[in-house]
Length: 255
Image (cartoon, rainbow, N blue to C red):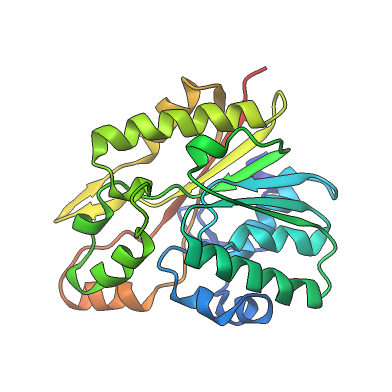
């Protein structure tokens, strides 16, 4: 039940969860290069989801591993499977795991390299992930394009696709994730709407439609308010509109 999720953290007037900044916490367990990744989700958010949805010994799967935030689940006895396409980020993930193991992680982490459309299905008890945006290189503020282009260097990266082909690609991803989970197994999609000029592009409704026609039923729609980023402050100072909240979409595999 949503009332049991992250109960130790404050809420905004809108009911959004407010997690603390995680930069210092991340430095304790992750390779320093992780901080350069342009798409990280909050470690306290991941920990709360892991506690809410899993038990020690369960396996958590992230098909878009990126900075490896989901790896934090290994600190509390969960096993983690990470799929990552980009070789430089995979190397960073492995260095982070060495550091986390030295810090006393009790779970195990499995690294799989490749296009998750081809790697899936992979057995898991829970999925926690944040898919990329489509058209990444053309929808970001100009001064951020360098980071984004480095992030989507591989020609098979879904972020390179236009909206039409991105939707087709994500159909295969959701199908593979449904095959990876047991009946009623949870899948969490963390997403943030994006701005196209002055227009906010709503993403969650489309994600819900896609997931529900590919083996899942929709359960809960939660929100959190991430701490403001340096890039967000720059964009607001330049007059760009920004999105201040992230959606946490909880699905279950259809029996």
